[in-house]
Length: 370
Image 1: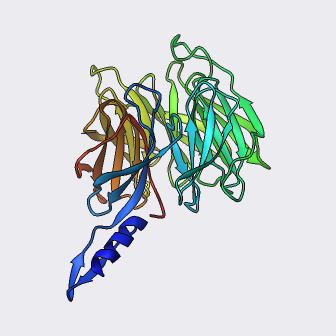
Image 2: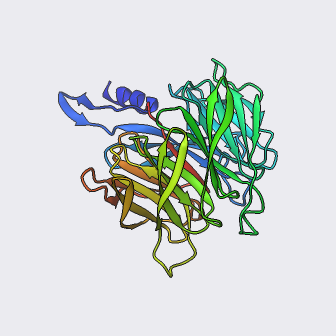
Image 3: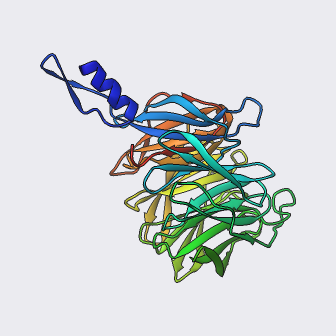
């Protein structure tokens, strides 16, 4: 009875709590499900979206399978109710894929009309999905149907602009699309244009309302909002900086600029930036320095606390689990995902668990609902 109960709970990916075996309480691991975005067309690439679990007591990751038939799913998100997954297909003929999170089967795919989509988000209603298409510098909007499938693209927005880097900024490169905490505005970060484009989104249509320009050659990549909705942080990939910005009424204003890695170190490319749930800490992944930079929030500005070695090479993506107790890092060039316990008082990161070996991981998605 006890063995069957444990097996059932493990299969469901939920906490087993205390199991009664022979009249005694037996502690069982509490696990949650996690998915891994990856590249499939690269040499040594993955077979699709990786499936796994993590132990909520120590952050230990475990691979359990793969969702095959999804090409270059470099970024993966889940629906608000956890019933569906959505992944970009980062190829020159870009697509986006809808997946049933229960059956782990592909529902359908839609072409984005742009090249190399690398990020995506759902609008606050969950009824529309937007992709950021890197190589074409465009955004694509899709309706989401009740069964989780995606309708045909209903809008394509083309960015304009360029920067001084001849290799990376010959034209616009949309890299990130996200809504502010209020859900009133969508923010598209464009590495090629050195800009963040701010849109309203109503009736399934994006409408540009403002543009925040960054230092020429900075290469803004991703943005993260403070829970108060008044401050945002932009990771600049090309000049290895983070910019603290103020935000109000659809206008983003760049302010304080800080280096994300020590001067004189190896060439460094910041990737992901995120804010702790309590708003006290900001974390940024450094590719090259191979670390997570930790900043403390002081009003509208940041103070560098230090750097934690990431335990791998080229951390493309970092994320916090829903509880905020663990940070995961997808280390693209060392084929591993590492876990860190987060100290609730100080925000300090401490390696936790054994690194998980998996092919070319570039995104980690710990699910909200088990």
